Length: 638
Image 1: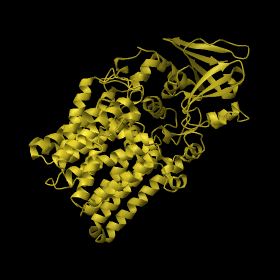
Image 2: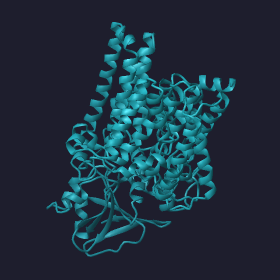
Image 3: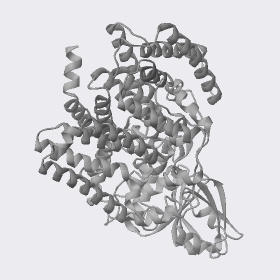
Image 4: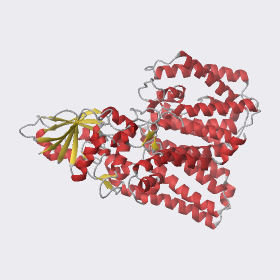
């Protein structure tokens, strides 16, 4: 107990030491070792592979798009400026490369300042693990507010949130930045109210401004909109509970608070100003800008039960189709919901926070299950969210409800044992059936199903009935450990970026870029991977991932805009040379193929071509082979 209390009281200093250790060793959690599967396999140093763990191909948004784009920002005389000429081989806002614009906008995500100061290798360690560690600490603080400072339950809540399948499988591309931003804003705001020192309030005010800006600029409305409603409800509860303290604020307290919001607004406005070209472009795309949702996909509610199999997602030899979409929070749903209703109705307990969480659950649940009229979805902005995204926010609402149930009610008034057993008997088969139905692609051992069923029964029973304190404590500890094991092995521990920079091809690309930095490249390959390898090495590549459509180029190749609905989208781009006319094909929502006529190559302005097989010269196409090694070819167009 002494050790636990010491660890808890020193958690910020311990976290700082851990982050320092990880940074000095250049460790990060990117699955960038996947490049070794596609580009000159087996070439490079021993650190092309992780020090520990397994790179995940499914996390392509991170290792294939986000990380190479971030690496591309370091090249050229105008490194980390507003625009990056390497992505898409045309001016692209560097904010799209993970906030790689060294300016006032950097304060939106202060971790990236480490990249500007320490370089990519050390800096990305800070970005990766600093984000995880701070989110864990902030999640504990958030749960401390909900649980009335119950340390054990709060640590459990922190483990459930940060090591959930949902958070870990989406981590690394900023779309889950709301977890830190929204919780951080509430935590800073709450302690601003509670604190009596002006110096503390000043620091909390700065933190509040940055947290709000961090949340707003994560730019993923599908999660941001429902999250906004959840935390608005929590904010209303905090203001109501502390209304007397707020009424007694001094003049300077109000000044600091107002300045915090002005600080947040200034950061947001500057960020959007610097990113205005992207915002205008993406809002007019076919995908994702043209998407309107009204909910009504009731089947997505089953995701609340999928945590049952989440620990298997990270196990070697288990090939789930899409664990990112299957990632969920451990909520024990619907147990906390039932217990909360039991307290409020049967025992006539009054708790405003629990009531608000139940209202938010009903709000989101109705949108997901029944759907709303289009006009209602639009005026509430829920049209920006889909059922399969809103259900994730319903999930964290259930986590907060679980924290509330475990800490905010008198243990003497629990659910009767027979009722609890009956509820578990009804819910457990639903868990097993829904999980087997959702993940039929993997043969799950019967032993695992039995083990998880026992775990679920014990945890659920502990939530519902009155137990001796020692037993209750052990159940909470076991639930924390189980939550930790659900997501801790999702990411590998990777040292540096040798998976890219120790390849012979990398040396050659950078040698060419050094001599001919403004030259444009394209990759003629069947895969979408080598294009991003070129980008990571500073080669301006026209068919790198179009995080925003390069309409100037596409319209040059398609002057009649016949294929506008195909290329006007966020897209991965593959290119095949053809003797016929230039055409575009839609391969999937975010993937297109350009059949590029040899006659149209000059229109692209390309000087270098990377391919994985020899190119044939034509009467209208002449090129010179300047590199051929380990399955990689580079041609210079004459």
